[in-house]
Length: 324
Image (cartoon, rainbow, N blue to C red; front, side, top):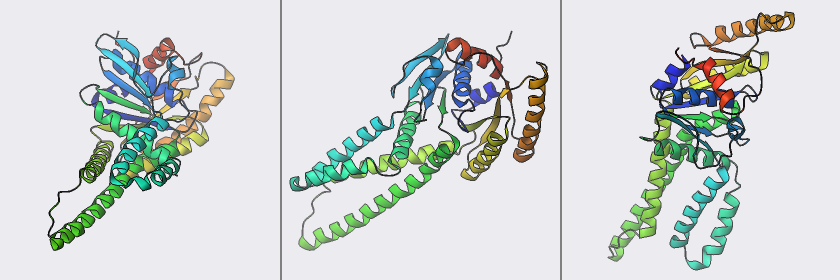
């Protein structure tokens, strides 16, 4: 079921409560899709990155090949918000310096330095990088999997494209009004200067940003292109949070395609685990009652640490068994 989902979508978000195995599941699913011949880009959006630890590789904001099999492969990225913020503000600063008189350059730089630490700047930078990766992945990758931060952070992030698109539209409308007033003033005094080059560049930048976020919003809410996998374990608090995440995703117009129940206890490995399995059954019954027809695939508890390609391949065999 999960491999079919990975084959049929262009984008998968993998999220859930902290500590339930989101990175392991997203990595194993990426590996399974690559074994199936897919070109996969696997991206960590979590500030506390674990993706490199899972693959036992040093990762960065640029893609690194972590697995290949025949025609398929997995490239991995750990988003660096600071690098994205620096790139964004360098572009903004260059534009501002062309627009402003030299006497205002120092104060403009001070303002931009303060803006880098403003509330929401980190989330905006992560979203900007997500949008860039989605845009640049067209034609290069069959699937992009986002291994996300814990639920609350991710849900806030997924609500941002619409807000930022609206905010950018407001900025553009404000600039349009200003330009109309300026054009009227020029006609009164008899001048017909073209729009300044720097001003035109700023407008182009705003339009490109608006279109990028609008595209991301369109893709994220397109159930044929994008799905969200909620990862959970069969315990009271993770199940309660998963039910809430499914409800919030539905409100945002995002398809919650499945709730993957990870680390399921065996029923035939002694009295202790059998008793634990029975309690897990109770929690899963509550989960199924709350989420209706959404599939609930289950992944057994595996021995050992899930780090390195061999361990991830073992988990991939559980998520998407190799035909044999």
